[in-house]
Length: 202
Image (cartoon, rainbow, N blue to C red):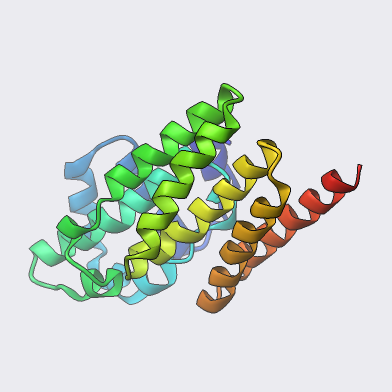
C-alpha cells in the first residue's frame, strides 16, 4: 500500500489528520514545513504523542510507511526538544543520537529486498541480527521496532522452510505487543501464526 492510499483511508478525526500531515511532510522531506506545523500544533502534539507510539494497523505491513512513521516520531520529538521541551524524547526514553533508527530502517529495507529476490534465508539472517541487537536495548523506539522486526523475521523464516523458528519469533512479537497493549499488533501476529499452521498442514 502506498502513502497516498494510506492517506485516503484515514478517518477524518483531528488527531489522525494531524498525524497524517506530519507523516506526509516527513515523506516529502519537507523539514521546514514539519518544524512549522509542529510549532503551530505543539500543545496538541505533546498531549497526544504518547498514543502515537502505537503504530496504525494500516501501516504495520508496509515497510516504507513504517519508516516514515518512525522518522516522524523521532523528528517531532527532536523539534520539540530543540524548543526547550524534552518530554517527548523522554517518552522515547533516550538520546536520539543513541537510537540508530536510520540503521534499523536500512537493515529492514535490505531484508525486504532479499525477500523480493526469494533469498529468504539471507533475509532471515539480516533480521535475526537486527532482532538480537534490539533485544539488548530499551525504550519506546525499541518497543516500536522490535515486534515488527520479529514479525518480519517470522515470515522470512517460514518462507525459508523453518516453520518452528518462524512460530517461535512470531509468538515473541505477539507477546511483546500484548505487554505493550498493542491489540492491533497482537491480532496481526495471531493471523500470521494461523497462516503458518495452515501452510504447515498442507
